[in-house]
Length: 139
Picture 1 (spheres, rainbow, N blue to C red):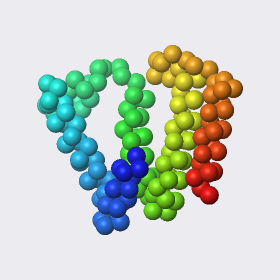
Picture 2 (cartoon, one colour):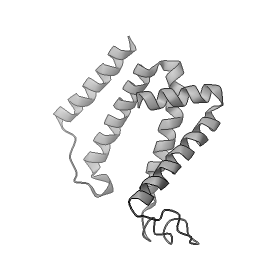
Picture 3 (spheres, rainbow, N blue to C red):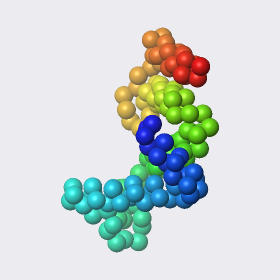
């Protein structure tokens, strides 16, 4: 994340944040297409429906399964914006804290069909330690 965010931020400072995001997305898309082709998949199958009829996702796939793309966009955009303002260390520390909090909630509720792991004192202590890490990096 530190290298990715730094590179994206540098690219955004030379072009613009929207242009950097488009370039980043095109590179990710090209890599994904190459990987899918290498694995014998056809990611660009012609079909009238973008997801289900192209075989990318079965019919009835919950809309929440597509949030990963939105989250990826958000992380890339926020990192490119925050790195020059907050610094790489603090930005990554905040990202880790946010991911830790999200993971705790997702685990607790058993989101996406995963086995539920209730919030416990030791897991909360882990979040407290992540918060302490953010405060230490900030100094």
